[in-house]
Image (tube, rainbow, N blue to C red; front, side):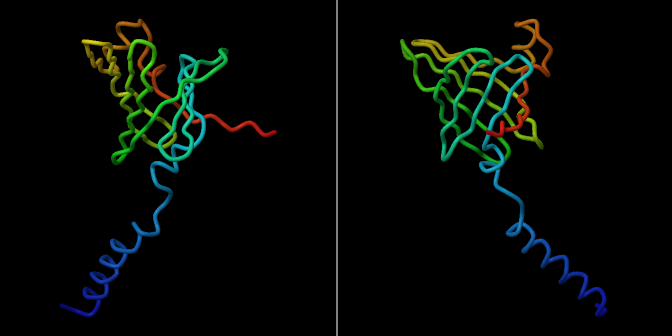
Length: 139
């Protein structure tokens, strides 16, 4: 092997080992802040595993928990009256959280609906279900 090839191989190996350690923010850090979909649903990611969901024009937010696995994000509402829970399965790409599916859990039943089916059932275009980051208001 020539010196040039050895140097190139070493440089490649070094970049594969060092660059991930110097990479950008984690997915969790990238999520922090406010998100909104085309239907006026709001999603706010706070510290640790806390998130809040609301609706534009309405006061109040529902507390949720979220977890991240790679670029997949799962947001789960806390049990409401009667024990109902909604889980939103999303994936992050850039500044967009794409809705993959919604799981609706009610006492004695659970139903998971893929985003395409949910869009069809609700009569809304699929793009309205995806969340984009919204700018923070300056005070």
